[in-house]
Length: 636
Image 1 (cartoon, rainbow, N blue to C red):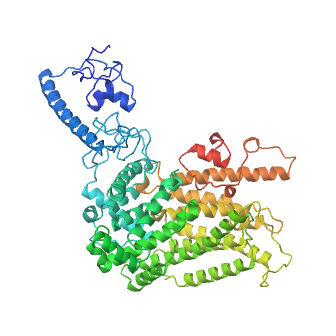
Image 2 (tube, helix red, strand yellow):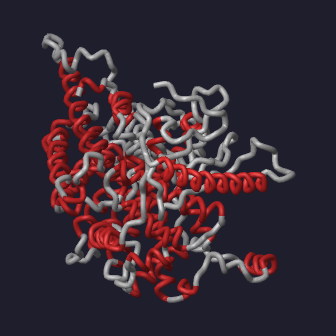
Image 3 (tube, rainbow, N blue to C red):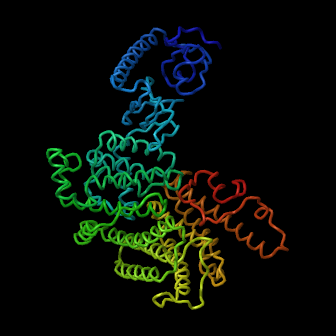
């Protein structure tokens, strides 16, 4: 039905608004050409006339419409005044970056057919939105990516918030206890005194990927407001960032850039709060003079000077070390925060005070990560030397073997000190096996260009049989992977739900190394012995069964949680392994008829360990699997 003519720039009368504006209960204002309304043009929607003229009480409608129109006119006037204030003399003009207004999540407006965004964005063409919901700018800030979905996010009720907090306290925090959650830390307390940490906990205890994105948008809004607009540095921001980074799934779902940026922001907060090391007397004097003694008022609270506040800050800087070290080795985009004598002292204080029952586990986790980081420092130095000289590192040099043995000896001493009655001993043992696996990698490189094993008896400068030492480290890696898997199988399925990011990173990297050791082409290496000890395909089958069992937990009754995506990765890697080995057998047996499903594929099947595939991982995107595994998605 044709819409009756409406004067340009005026609101359509009742029954004549377009379909989109009618559904959203918004004012429908025609544009100059008369084909669309302003709202549909701005939101890039199809502007269609209503199917029929709606009947209603005309008098009541006109009265309410008049009142709504007056309110909207006042709002437009207010926004115009604000925009003109921002665009005062000295501004570049209309093209200046302007902040879009925020919609408070505590009182969201339901919008049907529209979009409700909770992020802030800067753009050269951004203007204040005059509709009932802000719209996404054409060129959003890459640090705060927005998603085109409708939001109806509201603050959870007290009971719902308590459920999130209790789950975090009982099922997630025990695996990485960098927070001392005392009984008084209820949802009300966190809302009042640590709102950013509260939002971070709500986010990481939301397991549906799509629903978590909504929570992430609010988390980024709070972070943007506090850290960038208000330029605040406080322990709440740091603890919230560390919580989100520890249990984030972004690195597995194509958002590694966000992880690396948030990690750098957390490190900057450690520096701003002077947790990394105390300021020198000269710097303290200069800050006192320039700020007139107000330098610490914005970054410290009275509770920071209490024993609880002191231990809270010390745990935070140590947690930042663990996370930065894990993210550095997983993504390879930044360096871990440097270990300092002040951090060593903080670790000693935490171990002595025993203020929290889980401190023994946390101290052991820090010690393990420190050994792993020392091994990683050697590898990073090799990469730096290679970039400068172009010469590949000598993986089995005598000094390196001696350093490797020293690290391994320290690791065994640390493992012997683990309390046998520790509640999370299985989690700690998996961490220890992974650290030893990482240390053993100093003796070899995962590369096609790596030198073959030399068992001729050639000795190094210190009389070390380098070839045999390298062979020992290779086989020890097989034993480490087997022990890691044995400990993984002993972990109850419900406990897997709350494991942090670095636990799943360990699983993926262990499987990658197992693939390398199972297919290493060297005349002195027995691949069949590796397969008899830890069979790659059987291992992936067992891991799939464990993940499927954990996916039946009540908290994971959705189809887009992390364990589902990890199962997808293992399933497709299993097919990849079968195809890879079938191709190898086809080369050895040229008379055998090729399997059309695996051999005749024209795609090159690459080696997983020869690619920087971890940095671009997106388990929710079939195209990523095709690009990495070299086989089309229809093959699976």
